[in-house]
Amino acid sequence: MIQLWAEKKDCCGCAACAQVCPCGAVAMRPDEEGFLYPQIDARLCSGCGLCLRACAWKNNQEYPERFEEPLVYAVRHISDGVRMNSSSGGAFTALSDAVLEQGGAVYGAAFDDGMNVVHARAQTKPERDAFRGSKYVQSNPGGVFSQVRADLLAGRKVLFTGTPCQTAGLTAFLGGADFEKLVLCDLVCHGVASPLMWREHLSRIEKTLGSPVAAYDFRDKSLGWHRHIEKAVGRNGRTDNRSLVSQEHKELFYSHNALRPSCHVCKYASFARPADITLADYRGIGKILPDFDDDKGVSLVLVNTEKGRTLFNSVLDSIEYRPGDTVSCMQTNLVRPTAPSPHRAAFWERYRRKGYLSAVKKYAGLGFKPRMKKAVKRALLKNGAIKK
Image (cartoon, rainbow, N blue to C red):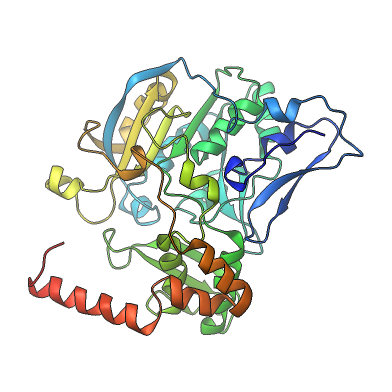
């Protein structure tokens, strides 16, 4: 029988294999960490091999239309309201507005009614607004690749946004065909976090709110763009962006204990992107262009293809921008994948034995001693006793 993966690091979870199967033999099932992996039902499998051919993770795809070096821009949307509701500078809103105004469809990550992160389709700006903001959880792609193909075959313009492995997966699902009206937009990705850990965090934050979560912001800007804090809003109207519980998921994410195994061997952590346009925070912009940084967010935009340049040029009336270069915009995940935590196995073992709270306290810096060390370091930095 066909084997799609031997080790967990061999699968990025894009679900192209499941969506391309004509027999419905491939289903995405969660493992013990909550990440989705394809499972083949031998009773339904015809052995056609389409699932293997649709695996961009295994196959070395070539992207001949890419520029030798991307065009680099620092971007701010002209609307402060858009920027404050975006993770960085609102570049995604400008790009997606252009597609929607042409009667196109936009795809991105959003919360469903149960606060699960899923990929979805939008035809209006209010629907698209659900895609704004980073989602530090791996999205469930469901059947959106098939929806994208249907839109393209109907002659509709499509902007698909996702992680680089998802955009590569869509390209492989489409058989490598260069659809003129498809624009791919990926992210400079740090890694995707476990949906299981997200559910555990939701359960904790709902107790502090005294209500189910109605909305969640992974990059709340109420204290400025340079401060990374998360904010939960309950159905009862209560909000929390200050408590230790509200920041648990952020701390766990950056501990690297709950990222998908494939993220640590990511083949897209470079300037050789599978998408037409790449988006990220333009970190360090305050030192490079201090007059352009007002602490409301600046997007890094990498234009990788002629198709991407055409879309970018169409939104110049709605953005402010400054040219950059690949040196000044350099980020770790444009050079190499995120390194795994040396405690990853111990974290998951403790979670299985003692539960979520015990695991995050010990391995995500949320115990008493790690918090005291952070507090002392912040005080020393503030007083100038030490430097970053």
